[in-house]
Amino acid sequence: MIENFSENICDSLGIVEEKKRKNIASVLNGIESIITAIVLVLIIQRFYLGNFMVPTGSMEPTIMPKDRLFGNMISYKFRAPKREEIVVFKEPIQNKVLYTKRIMGLPGENVCIKDNYLYINNNKIESRNYSPLGDLGNNTWIVPKKGDKVTIIPGGNYTEEYMRRNINVGRIQDILLQNPGEIKEAIPSLEFYVNGERTGMILDLVHDKKVIKDLMDGKTIETTLEDDYYLALGDNTNGS
Image (cartoon, rainbow, N blue to C red):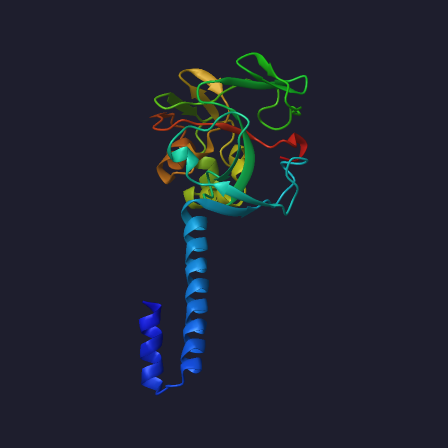
């Protein structure tokens, strides 16, 4: 095909010397190879092999800041994630910032950190240390699974106070977009339950406008999960 194209160009330009015709064919072949390579790279990166840069130290010393990773983007279309696998995923509220973490808790498991170790269903995971910082701390969380009933209970009716402070649903959504962890300040004293047992925050269930409005009005939210959830932790707990 490229040979016919080359012949047509030479004919249209009136080039008859054989050496010049071969040089033009050689240049066009090189251009075709470069374009093909670029297209293949773009297809592979878009659908099969992602190229990611790690912006923070949350995975030190396993992965250092500014390290670049190639990620397999098709494995989980055919199987579920396994414990200890490193994954790159979109943060659940902003849905655009990429996090790099390690899968540690699987759907339906109970997890907690005590004595600087992670415990899964009361079994000690000795592969690395975890500091009991943040919301997980020494509490026990349930990693939700598909079909679980999740209940979110607000600590009161905030409507009058929020009206007085000129805080509305849009303002709370903006706060969460800027810093998802501030849900505790935006809507204080939220409690999350999975099948009636207390667990940690499930942030992607909170950002919906109607959910925020109902929580501001002091209403309890109940929903049945359509997907499995996983607990992803940074290897460097102190910086994650």
